[in-house]
Length: 167
Image (tube, rainbow, N blue to C red; front, side, top):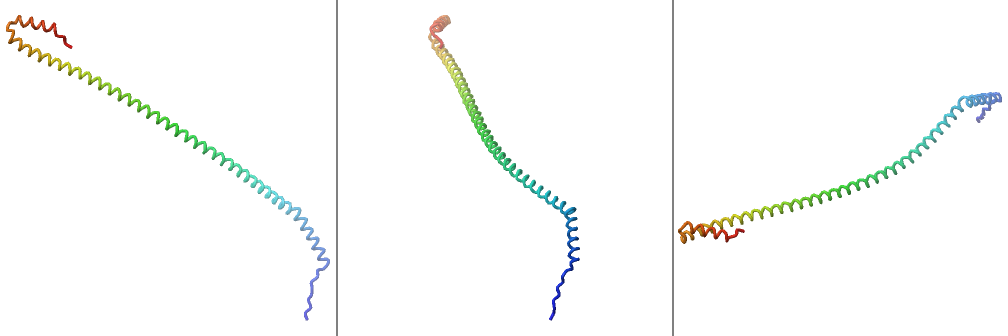
């Protein structure tokens, strides 16, 4: 049978292990753990600050988004107002142009009426003149046959001219 031999440490070895472990623990606590713990606390603090900054940035973004929404709503309303104003101005200009065109048309019509009346009066005057000339010629021919003497013709013509009124 095989006997198992257990290794049991010696009391001196345990003593020196404890002393070396204590010294190692002292040096680690003095030189390594403080900087490591300080670095961990600094890291924790910077992470907390980053989270805080992130929250602030998130809140700021929410505020900016709300502000942008408000600005967009105002811009849409302003655009609507400008379009309505432009429509009103367009309707006003079109109305004024229509009125001006009607006035101009009335002036043209009135001018045409006056020109027609003027030409009508001229035509009537020409017709009267033509009738008068024709009447004189006819009367002259008739009177020549009846009055062969120049003195009788002149007296008759003067008498007729006094009696006739030209309109």
